[in-house]
Image 1 (spheres, rainbow, N blue to C red):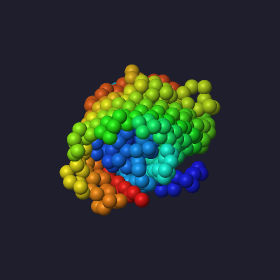
Image 2 (image 1 turned 30 degrees about the horizontal axis):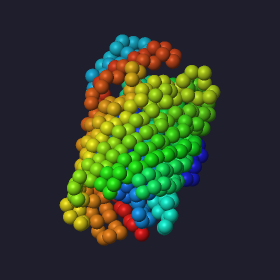
Image 3 (image 1 turned 180 degrees about the vertical axis):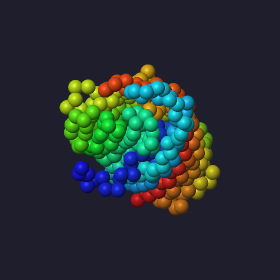
Image 4 (image 1 turned 90 degrees about the vertical axis):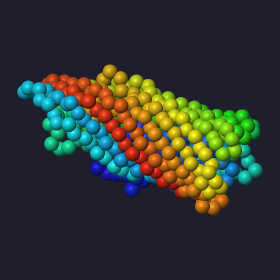
Length: 394
């Protein structure tokens, strides 16, 4: 099928999700190094435009940031048993799903001289998952391929109301693509563009303490393409994306040491099912619950050239009573560290590394579309994320 020309090489955004659900935390290497703690208010580079448009008011000079994060993940499937439509229950040998991909991002923030206005633009991804089971996986109706991709093209504006208060607003064009395959049961290859928005607040208590609050409305992706479920053709797929609310704080404890935190809420209950306008029943039900993450981090200035940072995040899974092997999700612990090197007054390079440890969870899934089959397994996940970013001020 036809692909939008704007996608070009951004197919690299087809990433394995390694935040809860299929959310991606991959907007900056600086954020990665502190487990994204304080992301909605720190504003130490142009990536603030992707998290809280109001925080752009804290950027004093035109700033450009570009980088990417390499995600190397492993999902372990163990203690699996499969009951086919006909035949007896069989045990499945333990195996893992390995995946590696690079997720780029680019941001620009432009303060208007002698004006309370600041403008920004960003290209990044907030959602994506790419789960591909081996072709010889015996439970084909539960494995196969589940790839959901999004690319966010955003423009934003911030207005400084007072020395303490700023507000922000942004518009987002979201390109979404879905590829789902279950042998003999389901084939989907569709894409589309929808529009969302974001808004935010920034409050500066003084030069050492500030807070940020942001809200992002994520649209339901109505995609079109080629699709068939149990041999019945269709042309549309609807993928509901969740809204996101984030509160962040930043506190400069000494001239060298700062502490940050973020509390993020994700409206995952919106992601109840994949549907098509041409089918009377859902393509796939998920029935997730609202979830989010709590992250804590710190930054320490070693010298005029070097800054180091670290952080921890607890990332809660939205999976409720209905579990699925196609998007194997667990609660996650992020352990992060990073550094910045100031090459000159207007050039800086950031690096960040996170190790993610997912808790083991049980999957118990049945299929009754045509006849009844069932699978049970234990799922665990780990990942390494490595990011690099270049920042330039003008």
